[in-house]
Amino acid sequence: MDVTTLHIPITDIVTGLNNRTRFPAEQLQSLADDMHERGLLQPIVVRPHPTGQGWQLIAGERRWRAAHLLGWTTIPAIVHAMDDRAARSAMMAENTHRADIDPIDEANGYAAFIADFGVTSAEVARTVGVDVQRVNRRLSLRSLLPELQTILRTRPELIVHMELLTRLDRNYQHAALTTLTQRSEVRLPEFRRIVHALLERQAQEAQLSIFDAELLGGHFAEQLQEAATGGGRLRIAHLPIDPRFPHPKVRERRRFLANQWRDWADALALAGFAEGAAAVYTLIEVCIAEGRIEANESEWVGRPAPPHPLAAEDADAQDSTDYPSGSACGDGAL
Image (cartoon, rainbow, N blue to C red; front, side, top):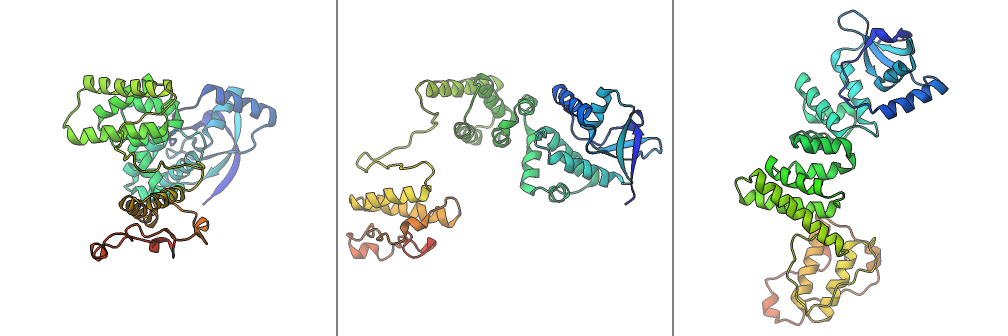
């Protein structure tokens, strides 16, 4: 690959490869002020324009725009002789790894690259140096309502909220949009519950009108407000409980969930609730084995194994039942 460094007239350089569409004025002015004080620390990257006239920008559009603001007539540039695919790959990779990348611009860039070069999302991921799950998650954002995409452009911290919404059809997305626009803050755990409730309704109902979607979204917003006013968090469902069971104790929020579950299962077993304890032990084993939760098993070293939850039951009733006692996570883990 031929590489040369030149001072090129700014007016001879054109854009056209960049999937980035937003260049906030205040950020450009800040960059221009820095370039005025310290100069250009990193040259831009261009290639000879495919038409044979001038140069096409590959990387450094913000620096090029800042140079325009400063009134520079030339700019240092590294010249690479690249074909279209290599040039687009370089531009896309640079944008993807920027901290302030717009998620919608990123998604549109991936989609355009796939369409233009007939590649898969896995090939895009290898090209830009990210995992394929990120590429697929970003691509899914293109299914969002335009209003939701606009919100994401201005509030990129809502990226996970928006990725959840891609599982909904457009009218159910409208319900979530109503909730988001009526609430200045929606905690992610609460929003997950809302999306789960919407998914359940979506599976049960063929369609949801826009009017009903607005009413539903407003209902969730009211629930969030009531929960916040009461100092609590939104709950979509309240599960049935057995008041006879000893109350679970959360000793420390950062303590592994599996360890706290085991404490409670032990308490159930000691209190004589054999079947309840067995159910919780089974849940812990399955979740650890499937990698859904983690346990700090060092807390269990030297700790006596809990009594078998059904030890007091009729032996004949247990012959066909195998309740786990820790085998999935090591000897005596549970």
